[in-house]
Structures are given as structure tokens and as C-alpha cells.
Image (cartoon, rainbow, N blue to C red; front, side, top):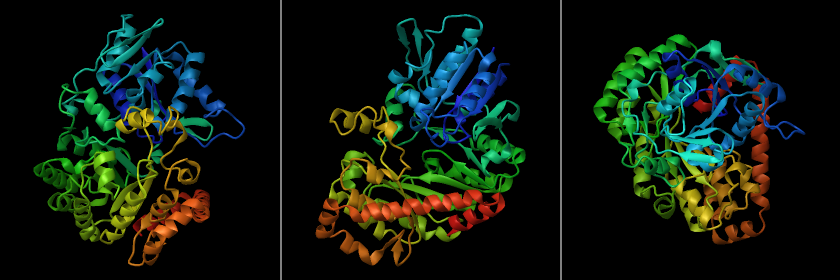
Length: 510
């Protein structure tokens, strides 16, 4: 049996299929991995991928008995195009996995022979072995399986508690391919871009309504502890091997929902071993409720270069009632102050994330967010993202029920596409544009592109009312900023890689 695993995620990391690949190899099963980061829209074409790319994908998968496809919701249409091509050109059994398949199986089962829900390591190996021995697969836990016109919807198995039992992600260059332009090329070290992503845990202690964590917590109710950790030794061993294999790695990105939630003694062990055996900059995520100054100091001593905190809204009403992030404004300001107080020890400034264009926000909620941002202690950087209603989340279900969105809302929205401030039919665009313009580095005089001494005027009742009625101001400003960013990006693409890297380093440092 040969297997082909395909990711349409935006990154070539794709932990899921890399771990699956390693498991298959442990069991003597040959595996190809194909990474298809969504390309720019092809002009005058209804296709999402170049024809040449899909032909190569099918050729690589032609000898495979099983083809698995994984994606996030934002690239689900890309996954559908790949699955359709595989079905047309091969005889492989197809399975759709990943977070989108978990949150939206009713849709996904229309395009694959099976859908994997939740943690799929055990289910996928069981599926491959059963197909290899020509045994029935309709009762495998974690899978929805089509059999004629019927769909067998099996329950999930227990969560994997011993994460150390899983192999490290596989980076086998001989059977790894990456989309570049119109064609697939062998995976190389340069595709990592000098960064290595690692996950030291699974699960999140929060159940925010806009995130899949709440759905996963319900899915696995009474199936084990939702938050589980790899041992510190396992994480360090993986990083040692990665740095040895890829010498160009200069930064480690921890993708854990909240890395700092680990016990203090474990963080001390991590800091000691990381300084001794890895010795690189690293980034991680925190929340106001999980951050403590003592834990932050421990990680700073290990070389922590960037800390990102999700604030999401400065309005307690929005955080408590809409997002179910039970964080007071006082706690937000206290946690942010701790990060800013130790900013001199970080390679990059502290980053605070906010969510834009929430249709359930009122004017006073957004003004409260603007006030909260202005009260944050320097130095810091603001990052903003457009609210996406991801399938299966509590916020998605509620918004679908009350008519705020329709079934296709997720597919029309990239939470990084800031032109959505203009194009999306959501309220309070003017005030949201102010928060967007505050994105970037804050100083004594400005927050992002907005002068601090303008804020009182820009958020006054008369100014808000005028700009909501005649939205010329924010459309012109946003257009200019988006065009400026696009121009700078194109200029960077034309530069020599070493010069581009140097400029990016200076930009991020500032």
C-alpha cells in the first residue's frame, strides 16, 4: 500500500500530515507528502490551482491506494478542487481531514470517501491497514464513511494523552513536494524561511465562541483531558534534530494555543534545556488570564524573542457576552503592562491582537476598544484581524441562526484581507477602520498611523455619525494603505533574498 497526503494549508509545515507520514513510515507504508499553499487567483480561470499543478499531483498519487487531504477552512475550496481531480484521475480511496473536516463534516463527506473528525492518527492508520487487507472500514472510530448512498457516522475515540508516543513530524525531502509557481518541486530547507514551527501541546483552556476549541471540547466530552502536554524532553529533542537538519533555522515558533499555561517548574526545565541545546529566538502565544510575570521572566531567560497576546476587544461586554473570553479590562491592562515592562529583553516588541468587524459590536464597544488601546503601556505593536465565522463554532451557529450570516460567509472571507473593511456588509465600518489604522507600532505621539491627539475628535459622536453616513474618509485612507502595502510587498519580492531578509529583520525590530 502506498499513501499520498496533501495539504492545502497556507504553510508547508502542516503538522497533521507530517505526523501521519511519520506514523505510516513506522509501519512500513510508503508515503508521499504534497504541500499546496493556495496561489494567487489565476486570471480568466475558474480554477484555483494551475492545470500543470493538478496534473503533477495526480501523477504522484497515481500509485496510491489512499489519498488524504487536509486543510483549514479558508482553503477548503482548494481542497475540493484537489479531491475532485484525484477522483477523476485515480482510483484511490480519498479521505478529508484537518480542522475544516472536523467542524464541517456534512459538507466534506460530499467530496471524499471518508471524513476524519478530531485527532486522526489512530483512525488513519487503521483505515490504511484495513484497506490494505481488504477489510471493511465503515466502523472505524473518528471516521464518517460513505458506503453507497449511506454514510456511517462513527463516534470519536479517546483523546491521545501520551503525546510523546507520537513520532516527530517527517521532513523527508525525497517524498515531499511543494507548489512553486505552476509546478511541484522537491521540498527544500529554503521553504521553511528560516523558521521552524513546533507544537508542544494540544487543546486550549479557553472556549472562545469564534474558535474551534469550544467545539473540540464538546466533541471530546468525557473522552479525556482537553489540554495535554508533550514532555519538555520531547520538545527539546525535536528542536535539536530540526536545527541539526536545517542549519538556516533562526527562530522557533510555538503554535500552542497558550504555551505559558504549563506549570512553572516545567517552564524552568524548558528554559534550562533550551538555552543549553537549542539557543535560538522563539515566539509563543499568551492570553491575559494565563500570563504571569514570573512565568514570563522564566521564558525571557531562555531567549524568548516575541510574545503575542490575544486581547480581541477592549469592551468587557464583547469579551464576556459575545466571545466568552472572561477577561476584565483591568486584567487586560495589567497583563499588557507586564509584557511591556519587559519589552527591552525581547528581540521584537510585545504584540497585542484585536478583532475587527464584529457585527454584534455597538459603537460604544469599539470606542471602548480604541480607549483600551490608547491606555496600553508602551512599547507595543497592535495587530488586527477581521472576524471570520468558522463553521461549527458557537459564534457561527448563532450568527447563522439569527440571519447575521449565510452558509457561504466563511468562504468569502479571509481574516487577513483588510479590503473586507470596505466590501463586507457589516456595521460600524468607520470605527473599525480607526482600529485598523491603529495597527502597527505605538509611540508617545502615534498608535500605528493615527496620531494620539486626534483620537478624541475622531471618536466624538458628531464625527462618528458623519463618517458612518458619508464614508469617504475611511475608504480613501484604507485604499491608500492597502495600495502602499501591496507596492512595498512587490518591491520586496524583486530584491535579492539576502537583502530582503535584512530589510524584514530591521522592519520587525522596529
